[in-house]
Amino acid sequence: MHRQSDDPAVLGARRRRGAEGKVGQYIFISTISVYAANDAPADETAPLASYTGKDPMAETAETLRASAGELYGPLKAASEREAQKRFPGMTTIIRPGLIAGPGDETDRFTYWPVRLARGGDVLAPGDGTDPVQFIDARDLADWTIRMAEARAVGVFNATGPAAPLTMAEMLRGIAAATKSDAKLTWASTDFLEANKVSLWSDLPAWVPVRSDSAGLARRGIRRALAAGLTFHPLGTAAVDTLAWFRQQPAERQAKLRAGLAPGWGGPRCWRLGRRAGPPRADLDDAEPCRRERQGADAPAGGGEDGVGQGGGHAWHSHFADPANPRAGRLEEDRLDWRRLLQAQ
Image 1 (cartoon, rainbow, N blue to C red):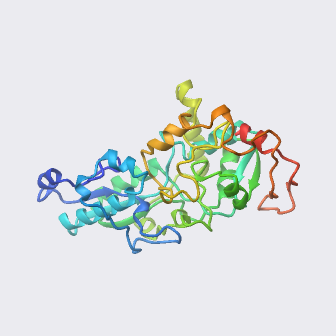
Image 2: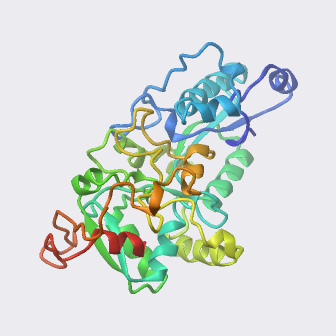
Image 3: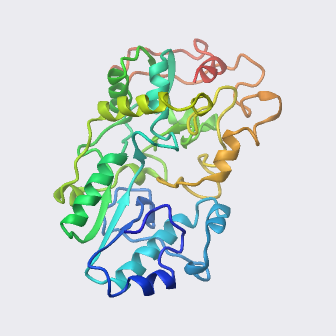
């Protein structure tokens, strides 16, 4: 089995020579970021990204980081092709989406149980109807083992849940499971974009339907379900993740690695409209993002990167509970952006 965290040139010459003729099944953990386009739903038959560099086997972890993630999908796609070429008829390719659950060092799911458990006003993205997909690491690991035991081969998107899930359903499910009294305040995509609040990293797991990355949360998983992929309930994943996080050292708990950070508008590296391209659904090592979260690139004076500068900048759009459009609406001057952002 080849792991997602290994070097980008996944099937180097030495590994090929050592494995060919000696294995009955080759399992490659790929990514849902291998697709050529991310703007629409896709199953495993959709076209893959093309690697346009000089030599995929010459790429390193350093060149991957330097590309701001742009090489990630194409290299995974190239690795898939190489695996199928070297191990024809015996390759299992698994394409995970956002990986969540206890042990999540990225906090891209963890942010929500932690934030909702704290209560108060919680900024929620869009109108609540955007789809969400993720997979508990325990479900992914268990299913991968069963695929190996069954010698099942083929290509499989591996994300969940089994039935469509919206952002509102996810946040309310997490709140219920963690017994949170938090109040969700929904901000329109237009408003968030105008204020440079980014999808995916500032508000984790959120990919608006209208974005050019909308397909990241709408991958077809029919093949995986038919092959026995099952899922922990959302509430179980949330509670277990929160319990794990609360067991971490104080310095780890003090600074979440994803989500809006108190005092400024969050990392800029994955913002909507960035020239480097769309977010990568399961990029493990985003060094520029990590540096920004640690404050290396935070604006001087501790401001919000242009959001709410000068104090009383108010929200300039309306918000509504998607289950009840008339409930919880806030006029322009009723809620201060700075106060809510600081509360995150």
